Length: 113
Ligand code: 5GP
Ligand code: ZN
Image (cartoon, rainbow, N blue to C red; front, top):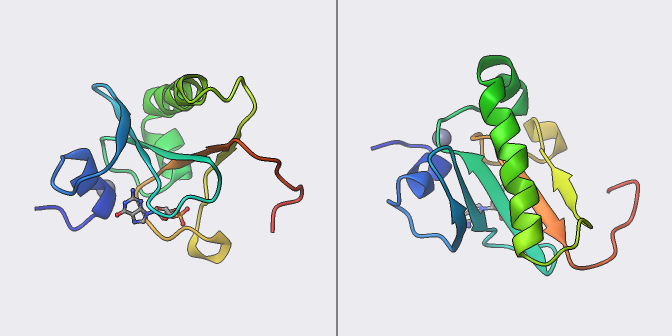
């Protein structure tokens, strides 16, 4: 059994509110949402962060972004959403299986805190 939380969610060992799944990616609602829509999109294959994903599996990076856009559409965000890849503990990454945060449904400040 994997020790990685998001590998376990991808395998269905840990329940999640899944909104999209295909052969490459799974998208599920964040357990601690920071906006009315807050969905995490992950590749099923384990990569620690977006740098590693882009270097080792660029085709999956593209599929991840496609899936994020599809989630934004299906959540009714009308192409108004923020896509975030926290990369490294210093900037807030807490789960080291790459995930795109799809955030929307409210106004956002810039720059982010
Ligand atoms: P990070 O801080 O690594 O960018 O994002 C990790 C995200 O995963 C956080 O927003 C956190 O709320 C979410 N998260 C952590 N554990 C779980 C879980 O067991 N289930 C779900 N659905 N989200 C989780
Ligand atoms: Zn993993």
